[in-house]
Image 1 (cartoon, rainbow, N blue to C red):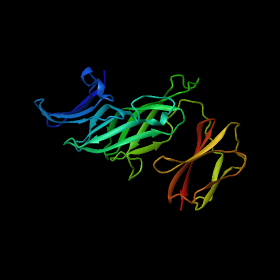
Image 2 (image 1 turned 90 degrees about the horizontal axis):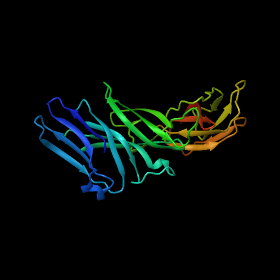
Image 3 (image 1 turned 120 degrees about the horizontal axis):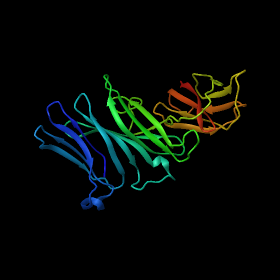
Image 4 (image 1 turned 135 degrees about the vertical axis):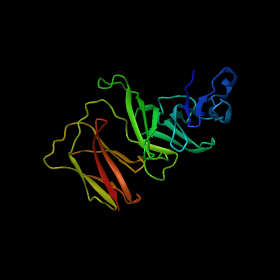
Length: 269
């Protein structure tokens, strides 16, 4: 059994998606995608078949955009065989199909959290301004008392081109999904200079408590891609080199015991 989705069109027809997975095409695994459009009488207007050979990909849900495009969301893997040993080979999958069946764009969304795998999007919708929102989950490999179900909730908001920031490519990386944990949120660190040029320094603020724990920091670019990731001692100054980075806005995230504790915007001149 595989997910299938169909959406009604204003002219009485419909557009949809399904994945072939019966015995006749079993040897074609990963199973081919079929996107289709029917007229008001149920006759096929077009159907597009993607017979991929090296990737496992599926679309769980589709919806029709204001301009008549069909947008699908689901999951995918760079390998046809699932594995928890290499979690970043799995990704959330989004594609936008034109009314004539041609691909407008496709996006792979990877979650950068260590140990997270099977990122999946189950539902999507278009906002009035054309932005897109999706909901789903990411499955963690480590079960904790705070997260006994292993499932992290995931909410994504993208522009009409499926991008977190303009001009993205087909591969995007995002910060960890929300976890129902007892993470301690800090306002204990600052950076200087900010804006910076060749480097910036991470320092603890005077008078702010620093709970015990293992600390590391990560620097993300505007697309959510990890630029820097290092363990650091919160009681000492930490210098981060930025001379080789392009000018723009970056996000510095401080993690304590593996959980996000503070976020600081850093500007590179």
